[in-house]
Length: 232
Image 1: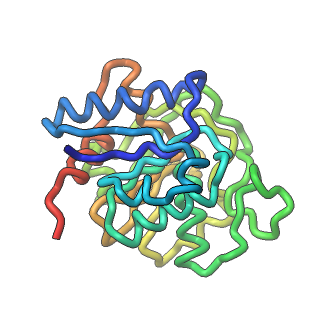
Image 2: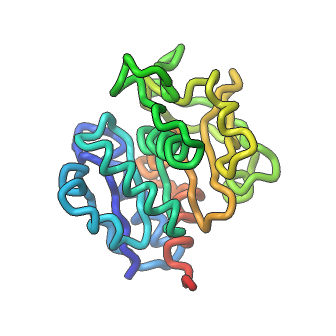
């Protein structure tokens, strides 16, 4: 039994939150992996970090700001440093970028405009054009792991977001292990992958939404396979 921690403050009114467990169930059927997926509210996680560290895989999901963002960041850091399969979608993607910037790139003041609008370094800023309940085309970098998993260099995916990586800040990741490997039609970054990690991906879009149409997304299937893979 593979243990998945869905980190986020569950709200039945959030479309992605309705999709997350369905997406994992579809991926489990497609891969033949038996899994146990449990929601972890960030307030509970702040009180007991072992709720995340005991998991075989961690998914940080949409609908931010989280009640306790620092607890989510700590769980992401654990996944990154200990080779635990990780997927961050929408708000989870933003938090993973912040965690890497602060703890790997040394940008301790990196912040999200949604949470700290007066911060000096707004790594995550308000989008020029809000992507609320829309779909868009995304180009994947040829030769990237993301493109290999999806079997294509072009996707059409759904969004519900008002904030994202500030394009003016993307160069801060140049030459690092965290590579931005997807862009929209305007050239703005929409996904990353972490070199040297079994599975560590983040997407500004919400691949879980495919489940609401009965489709299992290849990125989530790969996530489930990575969690079930033998370690050591």
